[in-house]
Image (cartoon, rainbow, N blue to C red; front, side, top):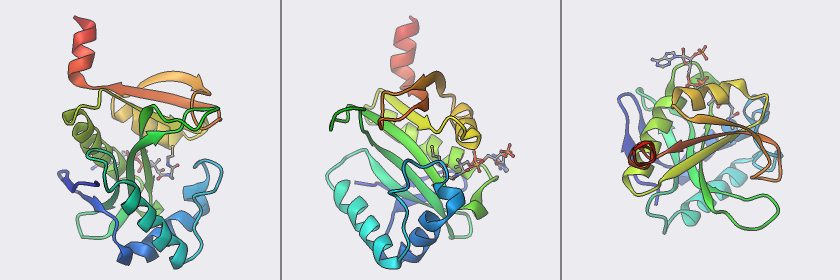
Length: 183
Ligand SMILES: CC(C)(COP(=O)(O)OP(=O)(O)OC[C@H]1O[C@@H](n2cnc3c(N)ncnc32)[C@H](O)[C@@H]1OP(=O)(O)O)[C@@H](O)C(=O)NCCC(=O)NCCS
């Protein structure tokens, strides 16, 4: 279930059916889609957006920790999406690891919202027993790689481990697991 979370400036909550116009606007944009997978997440109608929201709702209904959050800014406007989800392994239909991801509306770029929202979701993940979270970015997606670095994620170089594609791979371990390793 996508549990509500708060950050100093933002509210994170599950998407609702009446967010469809925003979801369509966000996922129809070329500048948002530019580095996201193979374009299959593109949305061009409110109906498709409602379907996407329904899919998230059902997909995460029985997940205690994972989720897809709508990011709400300080004036109550939707700013984008924060995801904590299973990441598909390359070459199989399995997903053994968990990824964090961010899709913000261009009007919300350059304000630190992606990093702030992701920090809260990662804390939530680690508090609930997740010991490692990865992020994969298109090798050319410098803005997304900067978010990973701001979050303190470690760059593991280029990898084809996920999505049958070459990505810049970042990872972050739970603070306790990390300290345990260092000891
Ligand atoms: C990737 C993406 C989320 C990055 O957004 P972003 O706004 O650059 O990232 P952040 O939220 O961390 O914001 C950091 C910027 O806000 C600025 N900022 C302004 N006010 C700030 C504040 N109060 N606190 C922190 N940062 C602030 C920072 O200086 C930084 O600007 P800079 O990049 O010019 O140095 C955004 O480009 C996006 O949604 N792209 C499309 C989807 C996508 O590609 N997703 C990634 C798939 S892997």
